[in-house]
Image (cartoon, rainbow, N blue to C red; front, side):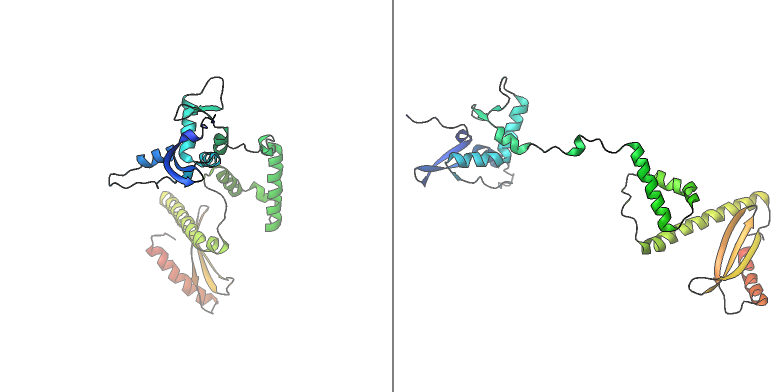
Length: 269
């Protein structure tokens, strides 16, 4: 007396084409159904034609464990029509009971528990201690006084970094930070200082004090630094290159040229 066909075999169509040793070629019903559904209006198919496989139970089980169409079918049936009394049994396309634990284990494999799922992490006090340590390390690397932690600019930096949605790292490289970024925000600061001083002069109708001096930068270039000051508001008007002469007469001539330019810009000095 022969054995009844296995549940796995019922998910395949026998093509009645011999492949030797008394076996026949089969195709997966779920792959074949997906292939037919993928037919385009042009007559072509979006999916490749189902592969033929030998009629062996091992081949059927191996295919069903990795067949995306059968896995989707089992999951859909399991969610829509759970069988009472047997959570592991699923109804297949042929109405048979197929124990799909192996298939579902491929979809939802058991994940090894991680220690951080049981350990909630460091406490707020420990986080605060780590932050204080990083602040001390930054102070030591930068040779800063201890009073730097009281700077409002540092508070604004940390508050913004805490709220921002973008990633803090990576920071811009040194050349970019000291080049394009510095030039961009230096211009913004210059515009703000100029606006503040002009507003003060408009309200008070006062005359700005003109301060100037020659100094040498790191590249050994001599520059004439010019500043405007009015009631506590200070504006660095500009740094102008000078020649090799730094006597009183030469500086006076340079200051006169700058004064004329300031008056043309509308400043009252």
